[in-house]
Amino acid sequence: MPGLAISEQQHQRFLQAFPRVLASDVTAAASVMPAASHEHHRELAVRVDDEELVLPYRIYHAEPDPGAVTTLAPPAQLVLRCFVRAPPRWPHAAAQP
Image 1: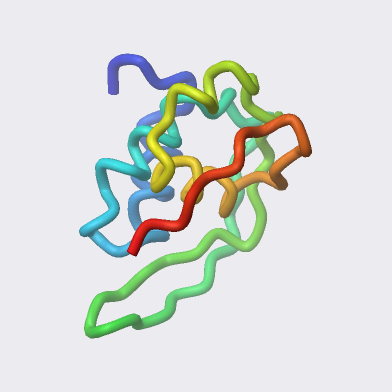
Image 2: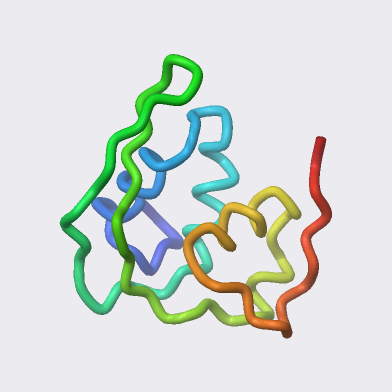
């Protein structure tokens, strides 16, 4: 996928961890994620509203550049915070209804 530092396999795993309706926000969040230091292999499958999600047990990414985070829309920032702990210097994403 152009513009991603992560592998296509990692991108697909991230997409599988969220409902399909959030696919564009997941891709936007993935666009600022540095490449992983190594691949994760353990996963947990769950069903949410008749959609199967596959959650990674652990991921191994450095924190993204705070400047890149500010370019994301608030929903994509929230998705990103599901992947990495949000340091205090990140902008506060407003919750979207």
